[in-house]
Amino acid sequence: MSDTMRGLYAIIGACLIWGLGPLYYKLLAPVPPLEILAHRTIWSLVFFGAILAVRGRLSAAVQLIRARTQCAATIAAAFFISANWFGFILSVQIARALESSLGYFIFPLVAVLLGMIFFGDRLNRLQWLSVALAALAVGVLIVGVRAVPWIALGLAFSFGIYGLLKKRVRAEAMVSVTVEMLVLSPLALFWLWGVHAQGFAGLDGRVTGGVFGKDAYLSALLALSGPLTALPLILFSYASQRLSLPTVGLIQYLNPSLQFLCAAVVFGEPLTRWHMLAFPLIWVALAVYSFDAFRKRRSRSIAASVDSTTVNFSRREGSANP
Image (cartoon, rainbow, N blue to C red; front, top):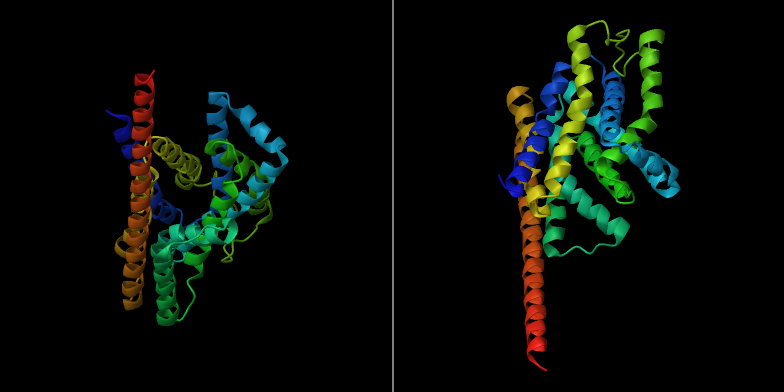
């Protein structure tokens, strides 16, 4: 099997795990979102730490902590990814998974917009059209449902800002995520202590007294959050090294597509006429954005090929002349 096919299977596997994530968090419905988030943080730290230890890469995490500027960016990124995780978990528990899928659909367009704001990127006409269509889709939902889709916008922007912060970190993904979980672990341990020992209530007022250790099934599911967080990231990193960025970007739309199907088909969340207007607008925006990305990628490839041919021809001519 070629490296390209391995990369293709890896990115599809990552997107399947991410896209079917709502099914997993639905099984954890008896556990309040903050308690789930705390366990996901701790078990992710354990799992990532174990992988780094086996690979002999724990020193890389120490180096990242000592690098002040990069460490500051990592700390900020930790809180944004935690907010993103919490929003996603909450959306499943309060029957708003449809809205969370919208957030991950519009994320690429939000990333383009953030690049323009923070890095001075210039948008061409097709990119402006994509962003405008996404804004129109959000506007349709606001007018039709008479509510701002805060979960969708929160997920899209929190993940977008997380991506901006990660651009400042020069460590590999697994190392930086391990440090992020290390940053969040004191808060996670404090919350779990409060839930188990002090009777802390969840945001919905539920007092579980701490689920872990009392219910074998739910305890196993909570411990599984570590591998389920790590595995798709490992697969994604593997695929990114073997596939072109446009290919990775297109296949990633499988993630919110599966979330959409989970919400509409499995969970039976209401799909109003306003959703039926908004989602096609997002899909058209993504199609335009993807077409533009492929066009630019192809132009760069052709230009590189022409340059290479010119250089080789010049070398042959030079070697032929005395």
